[in-house]
Image 1 (cartoon, each protein chain N blue to C red):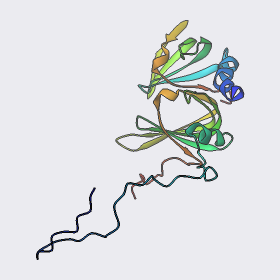
Image 2 (tube, helix red, strand yellow):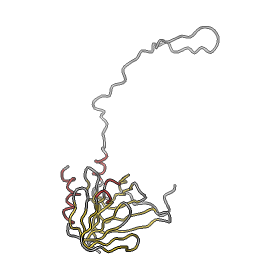
Image 3 (tube, one colour):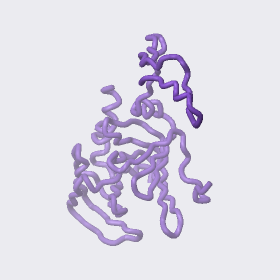
Image 4 (cartoon, chains in turn green, blue):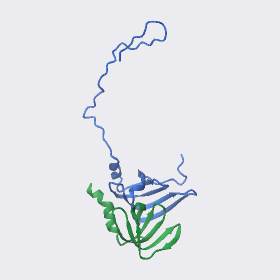
Length: 79
Length: 123
């Protein structure tokens, strides 16, 4: 049972520092480097770009996303 | 309930069977005939390593290989394809590598599913 529970939290530890795509419930995409996150899926990103269909905004520096809005966090290593 | 044999007068008298309607205990289940239960999370556990089709509460479906999950059914998926049912039509966004899907928005899991059909799914 414990090995199964580790998978999401293991995943969270592995992806820190990687470029990720964070999609929110609203459908807006955020692409940036994952600075840190917690068990509530609260996320801190760096060098974030916001996509809503096309590219809308560029953010430099830190972006904080509240976890209740997050639909998924995806790595984009192979791109 | 007392059995009434019905009045002997003519008419629509329904005569019941003569056996007394005693309340007997329900048939007991023998211990050897136990029902094998499959818990929902056990079914999800069986899917680990195979394709799974996740249907969200919104008009979105996600197909991927299940790597793992937790008690909240947050899921780690791989080789993920995202299907969105738009008013105009469906769109597909294919993401590579791994995703952590928030279990909050999951409505249904279909083991081995391939995602929505291109024709819209109407039978």
